[in-house]
Image 1 (cartoon, rainbow, N blue to C red):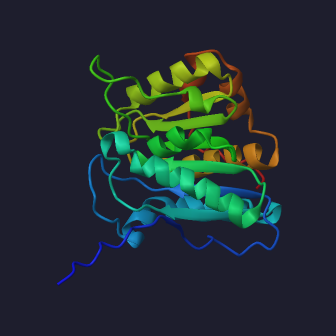
Image 2 (image 1 turned 90 degrees about the vertical axis):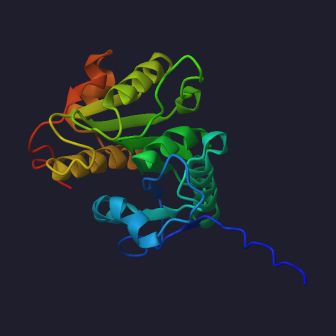
Length: 253
């Protein structure tokens, strides 16, 4: 009896968050967290939970500008070493966004392992910006090459990390940002003092910061003063910018 071939898993984009835009001018691709090693298929509901609230905030903020916001559903839960499956799926998603909407700018927004995927897939020609929230990055040691940063050239990059994150070492995201800043001045990093991986205590501030960055990079709206200062400041100042309590309350968006 002939064996049945295992179905090929495919990445896909979830439905647009918020109202369906008839004229799309920019796209946000939300990249959920994942595992370091796993061949299992992610649960769509659980995977999207980590980014859905942020995605809805971005969709609401960018509605009048024609923003389309999608969660990327991965083929597998794991990064899986050199296979870098999550980054490959992020790259596919950027290509799919161009197929659907044409020549529009794309911002990759990733959380945890999805943050690593966003940073790694930044070299796609449609991507103009990357937002990595509490990104998971591998330990830097002599046995493995450092995480690449060349693909970030020409992109605007924002990293946000809690200083008490015990799951994803914030020092590793600082080191990556420092290396990226040497070749790309449009890199900044905000620290959320005394908050952990999920950034629960400053959730509203992180969402406001994300919205400010997305609106500035995709639609050329002016950045808030803290973001402008972080991008302009030399390291380490612009890479250890504190996220102020109440950030975003005075922004009119």
